[in-house]
Length: 345
Image 1: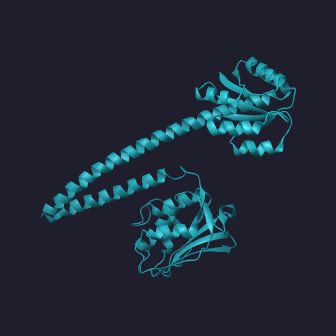
Image 2: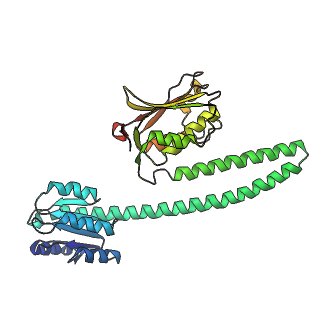
Image 3: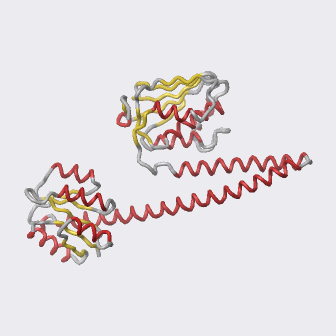
């Protein structure tokens, strides 16, 4: 049975709502004299959903909703009014609540309200289950990575000792292969950690210039001229956007060959807004272009470009490589218009 807390100063509507809900045999109604009472009942697990009624003049449903949401952000709330009030629609949406126009007599539109309560409660339960599973997976993943990497450190240490004392060339070659395998496993665990964090935090607008500066500081670019001309432009991306740019810098240092210049700029073309990351190195062979962003495809690149694509895809940004082989790599990131600002964060 679903427990519903009702906040309504209008006695006749409240009475009719209570009769209809309890009469169905599927709901238990708790009359709430104040938001504080509703909050306390929800905290003790007594309520599965809250109905907040708006009345003009009289009870300000939106103010009550705001107060409820500040204390119980997760619980399903339905904002109800007898007459249609346009600003309540956007207000309810802003507070992650549902809005229902329920004219009197309530019985005429009651089936809609009952179905909405069921859907809201079911959706909330599903969200809570998903959140619980995500928390468990994160815990298992982090603990597993930590413990396995500790053991890998021990294996690597003993392997180093054997390499130092080994004299048989064949045995040494085997030990070197073991060390290479250990290094690959470490890279895979690092990828797992970064991929697990993808999409955890909501996207936000980030100043491209600042992201490029921070990402570039992690690499030795003293022999490479970095030309960044994005001005105050910003794009909306996953918080891991800086990591994506870091992987592009990494790709240049590992794969670019004799790179002497990196150019990063924004341009408008027939496709819309494009963020370009280009170098003057050896470029990408034509045969590799179609598979460049596949997981683990590129030599020494590990999972980097695959992760770049996944990070950008969170906010609908696509990436392609359009450079000319032998003349440099050119990554083009196509940004949806609503995800781009020319004047900063």
